[in-house]
Image: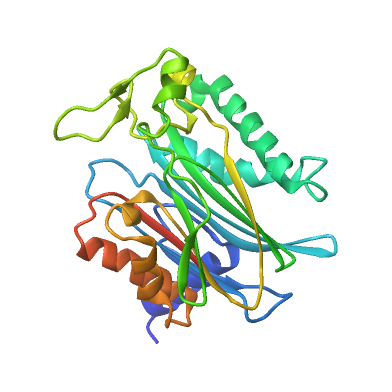
Length: 286
């Protein structure tokens, strides 16, 4: 093995151990210590935009006291990579530091999302005017899955071969009334997607201080208990979902046992289908 190959292997090991990814680390994998059959993998591909990679991923199993938490997330930034990077570093800590997390995780997540967004807005001078969507998944002791999201990154599970979406795509057209009630408007120009105030293509997001009066950062939260019929979870940014249906994504990787290979397969398929956006994907296999 050459020195270059050794360095590449060492880099891969570091990425797998840390489980955090930015534009400089494109893939990694890991597994649960509590249930050896539960593994995760992730893969990112930069889009064709003339800006730095704006997708960030968290994927790790973490021991907290006597419990094990699987922490997985996709943060898809717009107008900046700074806010998704901030979320990667802070959102899960804020969630786990909420006093009620272990008894009422859904409420703790909602509160942590609000606190995090408030902090981002207060630090707008340092963090900038951009924003980020988020989809987070917390797997508690391999038994309980709590999904939360703002924006259009998506969480999909597979049970007995059937895809089931656990997040809600927050699109301007579906939340037009609430946007207008806040004093905003939804544009719908020919050849373009609907946008809040003619600017943002999602109706909920972290940050976006200039639009915040008309946007929400309130997450939708869903709880799913893990049964014997659970096969896998997919978290991905809209760079994937713009070109693939939930069932197509599940069908594409259902028979791929290695989670990182499955995540890579999805990003490759999205590129093949001419997705031009940044594409990030996390796969958790049971």
